[in-house]
Length: 273
Image (cartoon, rainbow, N blue to C red):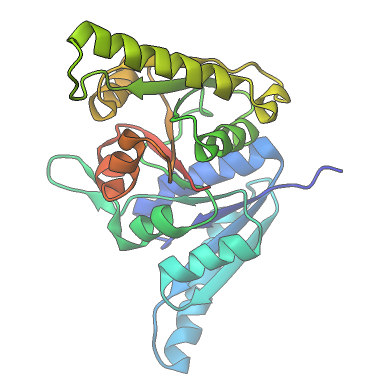
């Protein structure tokens, strides 16, 4: 039996959150799901909280009027990052949709503490919306390191965006120190990538998918390759696993999660294992 997915939009109800809200509505509509609109209330005395709750309720009602999907507003108290992550887990949300805090003076995106916490800690996939939605995601780039987390990321992406084209890419670095000559080193790195790619494509979890998956192998450094591919292929969404076994995934997703998310020139979906 089909169970409509829950799309959780975390919003501060300001104008800067409109892109994330519009994308969450589009996603809930495409999937036939329910929209859970979560807003964290500021601390204060009972009278202040009551006024804030009333205002938030009126704003949410206005935002969601006539959107065509079931809507449930949720007003929460406490630290926004922790409470939103817990809400997403408790309600079994398919994804948490958020927007970056703001742009800086050169046009880069600043994630802010709440978003940074969610992409690092939330067990629910987090979609960081940067661009104003003009159409559903058409072409999605999934960076894979062949780990279980990458497998989960592929499965979640296929479920959330069944009509989009998925480009699976593995970036391998053939330039690690070695006593072998450069050609031998690169050939060895390529052969290892091809072996792991074949094993990954043969996993039974992917065999059951409605569309075939093929991993593209690219030599280079992920931090340079991924932005180039996004620009060249007009990628709408970059998908990353929050934990991986390879060096590039650890380097990009671990201590530098905020840097990668802020620098990516498109929306980003972060999937934890």
